[in-house]
Length: 240
Image (cartoon, rainbow, N blue to C red; front, side, top):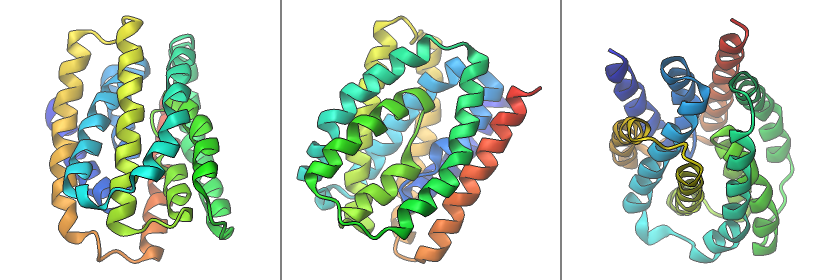
């Protein structure tokens, strides 16, 4: 039943992420934490995110802005490695609280970023990449931040989805490599990650046909609702 729940939520999460560029971890993390615990849920989600983002890259391959992707990854990758090392030193209870607070805090943060119509350059992407990469290493996903960051660079629709996915794919690959180096990636975690990722990847392809139909207002409401509900559920789990 646990696997059926993960596959069902994973398919929905992959479709949603394929449409708005983020959201898979916000839907899946509460389920993974309840089934596997917070410290196992993070590497499972990292493996699944690699597959989900790879699906988006394949679906929108011709749209990738490689300059923007490279500028972001040059600092985001080492930042993610440092974040994972920090995560492994934290107690599980602190991880649950950090995840919950992060998702809830992203609601006003995303709105604050969206209100400022600032045009980002490649230099800005490099500066932001290190901070976002470090946070991603600790709190699983920073999609709600990278959405306005890449859009402020000027990317929209397929170009945004493809470039953000390519950058995230590289960052999550670095996370998985660090988890493996420190012995936090046993075979059971890898299998669970591949099962979860297969659902995300399927959803990513399913989303391609509907990506142009969602209005900007609907997109913002969906992201805020996901962050708030996922954050509150994780804080509830931490307080049990």
